[in-house]
Length: 102
Image (cartoon, rainbow, N blue to C red):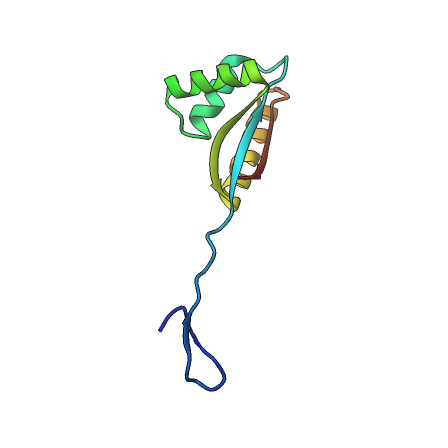
């Protein structure tokens, strides 16, 4: 039986549950140099936002200084951060992208 344990005497049957993996927020940081159009491009290409959603989020990032691009399992969040930073450097933008536990 998967997920089942017996104690040493074998007379008690207990079930164990795996904890849900921790999820991570991927954050986009505002700066004075990265264009709004590029931020929208990143939100659409890396994070799969629609144009209206990317535009709303870009404006929120611009106004507040920070925005959540998405929430993912750790490995996916790390990959999205790396993709964002690589794309920004490739296009000469200082865009910052980080992740933190939800």
